[in-house]
Length: 198
Length: 198
Image 1: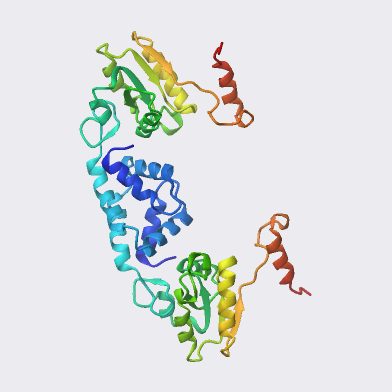
Image 2 (image 1 turned 180 degrees about the horizontal axis):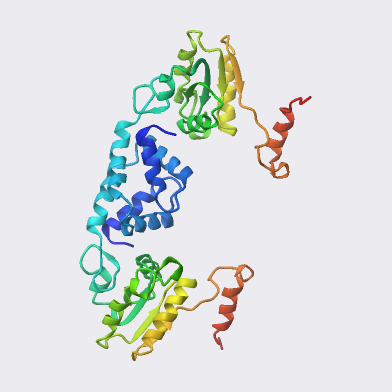
């Protein structure tokens, strides 16, 4: 509908996840009309980001060096590994400031529907990391959905062969939520995982 | 939370309209991890789009030449001008294939709250286009909201001084919608604007 490059911009923006044709159009016009928006900077970052960003050779987290800041940090506890699906899960957990161990990023979850099996995830690399006996506990922090649970089950069976404690993040009511709005499965899990308080 | 350039990318994406921190993060990871996504092309379009795109010297629509494709089209009726707020409104109206006249893009609407008065819009240019007597009807197609209505009222008063027919797009029920879901103001307008069918 637009002339040449404006339509090209709308089309390219529309390829990004979560951006439909209407949003793409609004963003394109914003870029065109807002002089304070630094297009050159965004363009430069886009050009360099893929070259500069690598994946940590130890844990698979995103990193600008061969190993990520967490794996390089001597204050982190090497006896504890938290297994997550994606690099963004690392950021979410880091935000809690609760966990002082290391991570292992699987690069996804087992999903037969999408054709993703255990061999497509960095499970072999995880087993190699566990081989030298340093790690004492593996915390499985995959998503609490179908694929995440399948991956957790697969991993926990695989890890029982080793002398390592394997744990899974607790499921239950989200803090700050209302009990009446919790779905049945979450409420069921909250009952199952109930803890003694006295 | 992320290292260097990844956070830079998230920050820049987050400056785009309608993209919050979560979406910015999701888009950044998509750009990083999806090899099929052509970053270089998006970067190149971003770099050139502002240089290549101008505004039509006649109507203010976006254009890659001095005048836009609509103003250059000899099949369009020069006696009819449709006044819109933004270039994207031109596209919306063109999609209907109902209108064969020309456009005038105001570049916004009168909004005292945002400090936008008549002098910030291309109203003087519109008056110049109307001066030679070619135009017989001005259709005011500003948005049916507070600012759009204020602009329409201002324009219609200004244009009564000229011997030109001034019309406003009809307000009423959206086609395909349910009457019970229409808001009171729209329903009220639909009554006001009711038409005889026999």
